[in-house]
Each structure stands twice: as C-alpha cells, then as structure tokens.
Image (tube, rainbow over all chains, first blue to last red; front, side, top):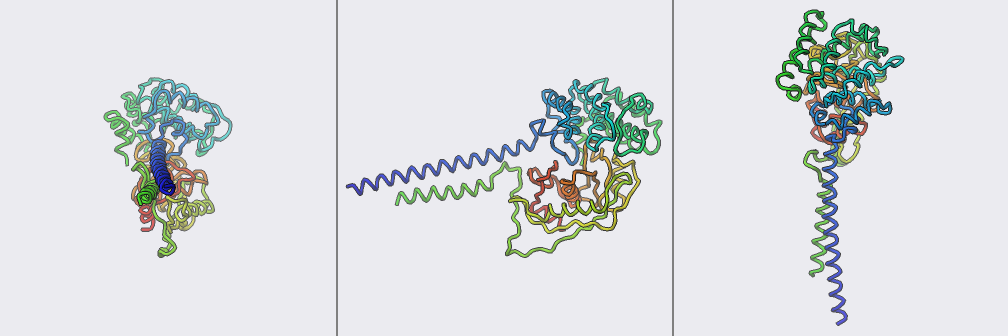
Length: 240
Length: 205
C-alpha cells in the first residue's frame, strides 16, 4: 500500500518536473527570439544618437537619416554644441540637414565659421565642409532662403574673403586652394537642394568656371534635374 | 513507463530548443558559417598583391601600408567568434607606394572617381571623397562592385585594415551584409571583422 502511494507521488513529481522543463524551454526560446529581433531593430539606428555615432563607410545613408524628426533635430543641435561629441560632428551636421528643420540653419552656419586656432583635424574638416552639403539637404526639404543664399554666395570667390574663415585645412597649402574646394562643396549642396534658384546659380557659375570645375558643375546640373523631378530618395536609389 | 515517456519528451524538447536557440534570428542575418575543422584539408593561402597609389597631398608611407594590409589579412584569417571563419587570404603590398596628381586630392564628382580608378594600382588614397554613386558627405571608401580598384581616405589605424578589406570585398563582388559583426556591414567598427563562407570564396577567387 505504502509502496503504491510512493509510486503515485513519484509519478506526480516527475510530471511536475517535465512540465517545468517544458515551460522553461519555451521561455528561453521566446527570450532568444526577442533578443535577436531587438538586435536587428538597433542595427537600423532608430536612436539618433546611436545613428550619428556610427562611421558609415559610404557616407551618411540618406534614407535612414530622413526618417528622423524635429525631435531628433533638437538632440542633434545639443550634440553640435557639445565638444564631447566632437567625433560625431560630421554625421550630426549631415543628419541635421537631411531632417530639414529650419532651426538648424543658424547653428550650422555658425559651426562652419566658428573660430579655431591651428590646422583642423581630418574629422573636424569633414564636419565643417559637410555643412555646405547639409545646407543643400536642408533647402531641399524646407526651401529655407537663408541657407540657399549662403550656398549661392559661396560660388563667388570674393565671398570667402568677406567671410574671413580662421580655420586652416589639413589638405590645402593655401587659403585659395581651400576656398576652391569649399566652392566645389557648395556646388554639391546646390545640386542636392533641387531648388530652381540653385539651378540658375549653377548655370551662371558654369559660364565662368575653368575646365577643372566644368565636369563637377555639369554633373551637379544633371543631379539637380533628377532631384528636382524625382526627389533625393530616387536620386540615391538610382546610385550604385 | 508513463513517467519515463514524459521525461523523454521534455528532454527531447529541450534538445531541439537548444538547437533552435543557437540558430535563432529575425531572418535578416545569414547563418554562421562553419570554420574548417582540423580534419578538413587546409586550403592554400590566396595572396592578392596590391599596388598602392596615393594623391601627392595624402600622407601614407610603406610601413603604414604594410600595417594596414597585415591587419586586413588578419581580419580574414583569424576566426573572431562563432559567426566568423578562417579565410586563408593575404593582402600584400606590391612595389612601393606611388603618387598621382589627378584632381585636387578630393573626389568631387563621378569624373574624378572614374579618373582616379583608372590610374595604375589597386588602392588609391585621397584626402576626401564627396562622390560615391552620388554626392554625399563623410565617405571614407568607395569601390565598384565588382571591380579592380578602390578609393579610400586615411582612417583610424584600428579600423583601416577593415576599411581596405571592406572595399576590396566590393571589388571581389561582395555587397553589404546587415549582420552587426560583418566586415561587409555598411558602418565600420573595430569589432566588425567577420566573413562568411560565400564572402571567403569571393576573396579566394
């Protein structure tokens, strides 16, 4: 009798144990699936801080950057003023432009001209020159005239003398060489803006540039046409 | 008997569960590739000699090139975790570092890009890249997929070998991979060093 009772208790015990193992296994399986999915979501960069702290080999991906909003622009403006975020500034600058929040115009121009002694590091140079591309993105979305005018003025060599930039490029021996590259980047910004006035400015510029810059301006006009007609997303989708 | 059967079912479930956990994902990542086991034959190391050509204003000496190529080779050859494999491929400098004067040291347009790619050598080093399939900012490398030449800018030593390996991967026909440890991920990182079996095959061809 006692032996039979013992056997029944043992069966109950084993059943409890197997149900426990079963439930534990289901829990582990679910947990694993959640972790894997979370990893995938993070990789897409939903957090703007994490996004701009990455180093994108082929430049800031426009499509991903364009998903951020004005709330994210507020965070990026804070990062632009924080020297501890210096390493992220190149991406902060570009992403701010892509978002297209007009609050970014003055801080971006101020950042571009900000006084600094000595030669810039390659990262700081990227961040500052990236402003000219960023303003193009910003105009594309907001049609901001101050940003557009800043880019159009950048096509005139005399403008650089009046702006009196204090910073030294790590790659150019003279101020004139640096300014020539800045003008080239303003050409790119105007192309990305897709704005009708940008096209006019590029056409005018084309009539007075030398052979060295002609290929750039011709390409900028082609890009402008695509961007004005189909938008930036289509322009980048067509790229390899 | 009934007791034993319940236990067996639970243990079997646990086993399959463990297998499933090991292979779980969201369907985006490629499955981890197996490394050659000690019993499988070790393939000969494929050597790719690369000639390096820098813009006259870009700073890069041969000692640094050798460091970069050694690190790029280590990225391929060393198994950096369960999702990685040993890929017997070596990138080696061919000749001295030469210089060129095409463009102003920046890739500002497709015309610059094509002119620089057409120069002698497989690796071209410039100061800034602002065109890679379109006008963009903050580009550190660009290469045709497939192709036989790549363009890079100077980068942090800890990641420069990965950068060169990544761009060389494009030349070998490889595209980006979303796996966050992959060398072919669109964003570079010191721990993004893994290659899968298909990628390794492309490097070995």
